[in-house]
Amino acid sequence: MSQLSDGDMTIIQLRLNLDKNNHMDVLIGSVYMSYDSQASPKRIEELVTYAKKRRLEILLSCDANSHHTGWGSSNINSRGESFHEFIMGTRSAWDVERSVLKNVIRNNLSLPTVVNKMVERNEHGQAVLHFCATIMARKERNERVRRRERDFPLTQDGADPTPGLISDKAGGRST
Image 1 (spheres, rainbow, N blue to C red):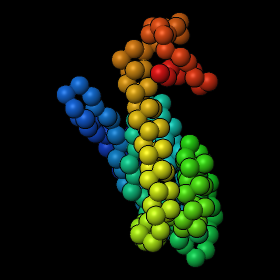
Image 2 (image 1 turned 45 degrees about the vertical axis):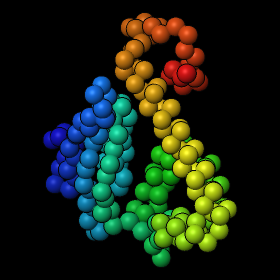
Image 3 (image 1 turned 180 degrees about the horizontal axis):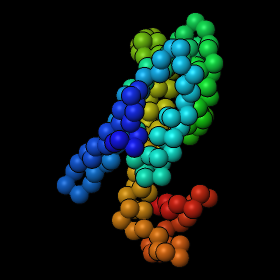
């Protein structure tokens, strides 16, 4: 996708067929930010905005040369601080569940630590299972809403053509 790509960012769009009648459109990309450049997550933020407007999922591999203790660095640089704020802002839907899990696991959610903690104590395993089940249930609900909005879009005057569905606070439809 030339409008989203440049020398340091390459983005493609794929349509994944989930089953006979359903698909998911995904942006997949690779991003590099030189350690000596003044690059910020602005380009990533623009990509996220582009994807949200079009209801696309995103999968990025990013060498941002950013340092933050949130992902295991021993120090924090300005780019790391900027990315950390951006990432935490985009994950706000999971903050409560993530915080609960961090309290049980003791603040380190790296994969090796989580696996070791799950083996170590049943309570930790139950906390991870609860976290996963909660997040998956939310994602499945959102996918049902997304499909309903795709199949039954609002009319031009904003009216909902699917009577009987309840609107949530954000104006979307839910079951």
